[in-house]
Image (cartoon, rainbow, N blue to C red; front, side):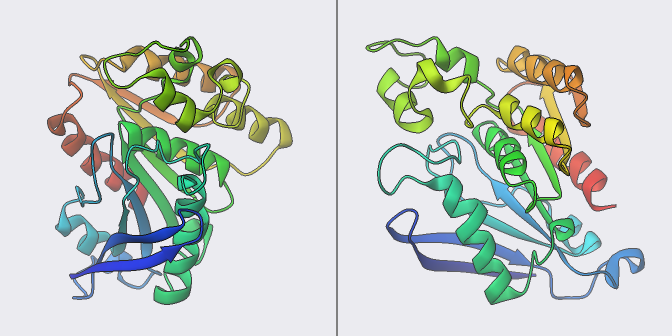
Length: 256
């Protein structure tokens, strides 16, 4: 397994940024997968997190796929309001293009996947929907689908995570958020109305997770508009025990 740490200049973020990569190169893939083109998984961290690999190495080798791990700070992996905060553009356009040109990976939609947890779960869902012609599959665990909560915030208010000014910078005017393209519900509906190709979507949330109701609400909305997806609930909280379990389960589902 090759481990790479790479720096490049991002026009979207207006600065030099770094990302990590794991590439299996020891030809240990199962015979069933060895001959196929190498898949590429873009792996997103959560709030307070940073680039890191939470996919077990043996799965990368077994299924023959590379892992790309960018740093998204606390951006929710979408384009913020101010200059140099266009994290969605960086991830889904610049970084994907760089990996394709330099490493000749993620060359097709069918070979390009995305996965995230918590804030990264929101980012994986939003990115896969917003760039449905780029990502063929997406997996999201304990997703921070907090759009409707943020939409109710008023100037001067805050919650246990951040204040109104932070949410406004990330998502735009909260009063307009529910009808904007930062709301994954809207993008899913637009794709279905247009008859567009949609990503294969996998979601999970623990029954003791504080984000459970938000995940249920999004799942129910997807069912309402007949958006195909897999949604799983099981015992667990907002923690590494749950994420480790579903990282393995979703990798198996996505890569087979």
